[in-house]
Length: 558
Ligand code: AMP
Image (cartoon, rainbow, N blue to C red; front, side, top):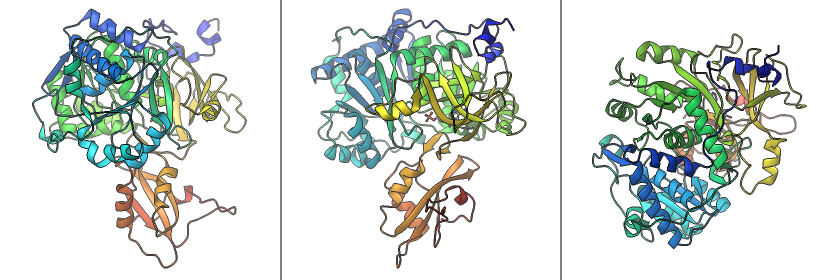
């Protein structure tokens, strides 16, 4: 009872690994200093491994200095946004560092986004620069920039920085320099040897603008500060015990908060190489593991399942790992068991959001997550260092006792400063320092956290978040569609997949396949409905609101 940890209202700290503090003392003031410290400690150590390509910390420093100098010459200033429309390639990291070397804000964008989606983000953030892959220029980026101009356009190729051209992921790639753009490597060559002036940061300065659909479905830019990033990178290192110099396998996309923190920022902090493989392909990942022997990764469970079931996976395939974590989507306990049987590696669960700069709760490194006897869910761990979590009544906001389900609210150094340009949304989401996650969870008396549901209608397809409203808005632009409702339905591989139920305008006719094709052209591949059902009428409440929930079952077509 006299335990100060209990008095602090954080019973879960008793579950922390022996010797771990309840609170971290953050070592670095800002994310750039964290990188610079690695350069100073180990300039010749590998910083990036990309197929057969390697960049040391000193080379990465020089490349990002040169790019920053080029951006400066083109008028990029402190606080400007630098958009990154890139897969997991070295240029993503060079671009992020170049932005930080000017006091600018890195703005990662999912390169699967199509014209409509990219326009919304460009409109909102008004970046000064976009660094985009050549291969996406013709279809998406160039067209979007015609209506949403960005002053400085830099293109780059995924074929740079390596010579292997692995046909499994780079087979379709060829060089095709788009008109009206600078080539990233050419810019770097022109400015090689130059250094931008030194910038000073306060921890409250914004480091990244990471777009998420948050709790409402409208894309919002979460303002992750330098202080958020240095804290959460250290959470990964100290909670999990990632050693200095440890190689880190980047399975998660770099544009997502998991990749930004659990791969990139962690690699800066521990001065270890990040292993990049363009985009997730299970066989390529398994080869990268065999080649570079990573010690840590964090990935969506579907990626781990795909590697587990790949024909080239062997019992020793995962033996280089000191720890494997998974987050972003629910983890079936049976998968954890199967993975352990096959590879002798226990997957630990981590829960977080873009707005919490990744980690809220993580399974302690010396423990195994319990499974909730009622809901059957694997615990998402215990709230991590410095973090306060409460479960509150969704109606009246009252704090609920252990064991009761309510909305998870979080306070701690990982909570973002707010949403870009959206003071009202910020005020709704962060109240008196408590971030309202929109997730429904239970904290048991010991301090284990369980996720049981989502307050929001969000669909979680293999860790990718799909907002019904956004897909419905596109469906409504089809001339034959009268009403549309989009729901998540269980899917053996993706966890959930996207299903659309529509009714047609009088006299109109369309097939489910045509609707799928229509959506495919207008949205990122993870979002378009895989199943389309056509009904004469959609079920509604007496007030005319479409009953999404009732549509989750029913016959599947398309
Ligand atoms: P994002 O901002 O894209 O990272 O999405 C955050 C959302 O992903 C959370 O609000 C949860 O609904 C879900 N999520 C994150 N981690 C987990 C986890 N370990 N288990 C289940 N769902 C998760």
